[in-house]
Length: 476
Image (tube, rainbow, N blue to C red; front, top):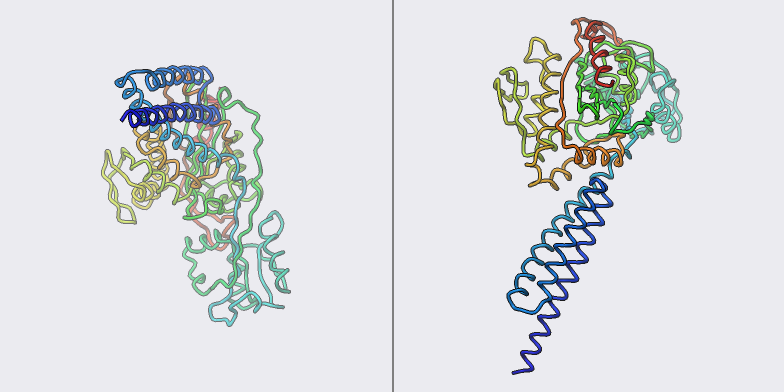
């Protein structure tokens, strides 16, 4: 009998010691991860260490002291702390995983295909051996150069250069050549402009070409210096690195000292001079040459340096909004989209697909792209407000998992952590304002599609100058 009591007591002592050691080890892991993530100011981290040390000492003292009640209390609180910290470790690991994507995806993907006539007997790239293949000018087009090099390693062919995609397709249909090389975004332009001859084509070979994005070196302190972030929303699903037309073009001007953010919307059809080609086109078409072309073109337009970029696509928006459990948007209009979604004037609760439809719609409005730009800013503001609210704590890890891989940016993780530390220290709210440049509806030839005059919005210089002034005011 006495031996059994002694044995039970030894087991109890052993279990309590195990709990005490586990509590100490897990506490060290939690603190190490907090330090490694580096989002807490050092003074906050020291306070956290001190508080956790005191709590651990008290709980372990209860756990290892004499007295059944103290042991029970110590056991209860130690288990509670261990479970809580394990949950915390899960949060920390997800945060670390999330930060890994910042500043490391500085490349773009161009998806090329070889197209032939559907009526032809060509089914594979080898069928074009010694045939004529058309392509655009290779100069200033690194991706197309790489694609041509890859094809050259597979077959021998006669190369024919065209000035634009329309004349190239016409050459194929007129049987002057047997195949043509088109990038995926160029195919989308043909579809958007209702170029029916596209239906006569089929793809027999495709390849993805990865290219480095030109880096904008920024020697700034993200917590003290003002800076510009280009937010680009491309009109595709799937791989975020794919080049495509940029339907969302918003410049966020940030002054971290004044706590001011100015969102400047630029309509997708704005008639601008492409930086690298020195020819006029719609701003949305700059995206098919990569986000670096969009950045350089907007820098020229607004006479300002863009330090950072964030690029998202349709999949990104749907997943982010759904991870936030929806957003509330205060619409200025009642309207129905081409997708069949209806929105009322006033507050609307939107899930991911509804938010995408709300942000893309333009045909429902007389002012078209102007109203769409306003709605995109409403969506962005609602996402920021929801993402910075305390409500996200309940599904924090789900949000990080949903966002992971759904955007690319050149903002580095250490810059983000500095910004978070600053926000912890002062806790001040940000003042977010929105403006938009405007223009006159018109039709003109564009660099990317020279067949017909397309709808464009010719800039009203007064609105551009006004935006330049407001951007400079925020950056002072």
